[in-house]
Image 1 (spheres, helix red, strand yellow):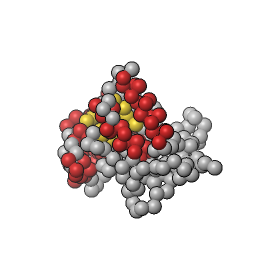
Image 2 (cartoon, rainbow, N blue to C red):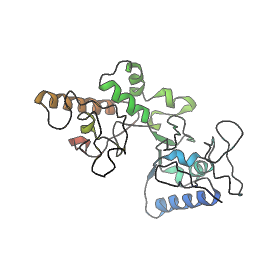
Image 3 (tube, rainbow, N blue to C red):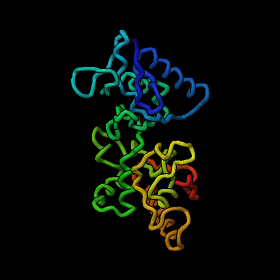
Image 4 (cartoon, rainbow, N blue to C red):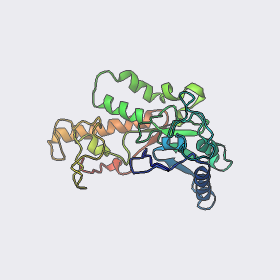
Length: 254
C-alpha cells in the first residue's frame, strides 16, 4: 500500500516527480500562462518538487539522488524531472520562475536549487543575515557585505547572476517589518494553538521596549531601523521584494 509523506507541514505532500503528477503540474502551469496570461510563478516550499517519487509505485522514476546511488522515497534529486520539464518547456521557460528553496521536511537549497540558469530563489540567508546585522549582532559585517553584493557566495558559481537572488527581509510568513522592530517574541494566540505555531527564531529586536506602546525615543529608533532595512533592500544587488504594507508600518501584533 502507499504511504503519506509530509514535507509541507500541511499533511500528505504531492508526489511531484511521479510521471503522471508532473505532467498534470506542467499542464496546469501552461494553462495559467496561455489562457490567463500570467507572467510568472512563485513556488511555495519548492524543494518538495525536487524530491524523489514514492518507491512503492512501480512506474520507473528518472532522476539522480544528490548523495549516493540509493534512491529512497523523498530523496533530493540532482536533476529532478519536474524542474527539468518546467525549465525546458518552450512556454514556461519564458516566464518568471521563483523558488522558495526549502521545505518543511528539513531540505534547504538556497543557493543550490536546481536552476537551469533561469530560476530565481527567495534568498532566506539574505533575510537572516540582514536582520542580524541591522539589529547589531556582532560578527555579521562580512556576511552583510556579501548580501549587498548580490550574495556571490551563493550565486556566482556556475555563472548565476544577482537577479537569481530575491532579496527580502519580511514576507507573508512571520513578522511584518514593524513587528520586527517592536517585538522580541511572537504573539500567535488568536488561533487557539497556545502560541505554538509559527517561527520562534525571528532575529527581531524591540529597540528596548516590548510591544506597540513605547516611549517616543524607542518609537523613533524603530522608524530609523525600518528605514535601515529599506535602504539595505534598495542598494543590494539582486531583486528587492517588499511585503505589501511594510511601507506604511502595518502590524500583526507580533
